[in-house]
Image (cartoon, rainbow, N blue to C red; front, side, top):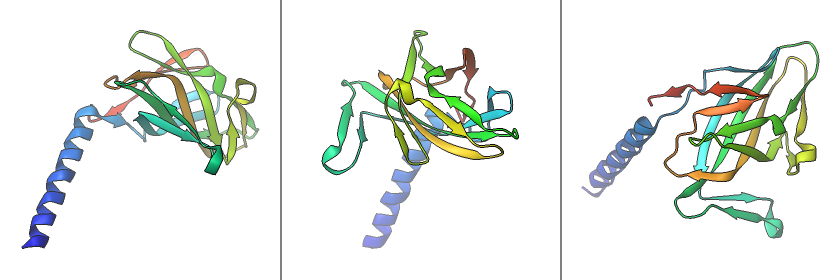
Length: 164
């Protein structure tokens, strides 16, 4: 009897989570967008969190958004379809909010290389390779705002969502 009750609670909670995800939608992982000629990207994951942690052990930095606001983290998948190495410049990627303000990337992790300053926001993507890149944006967003536009190399990119 106890097991059935626990199973029922589990099913109800999973259903509630699924409905919330369906209501809000999430970026379509299959959609690809142009970064530059021969280089495309897709959104592997987009998360909004109240706090973000950087570093390890005693060197951990905690960044906290104000109440009612969230910090955005996006994991991109870049693909270089050319036969030459390509440069990715993360200082040219922004999130455009509902007030048309641009939020810049202030932290990048690519292949275990930690980059936290604007002078190091350029990375190399080798020829014919795919690479996942985790980015964090600032300042924070309203917690209910849906992130649906990026500005990449000066061009507005409208994100495709699944179950909006």
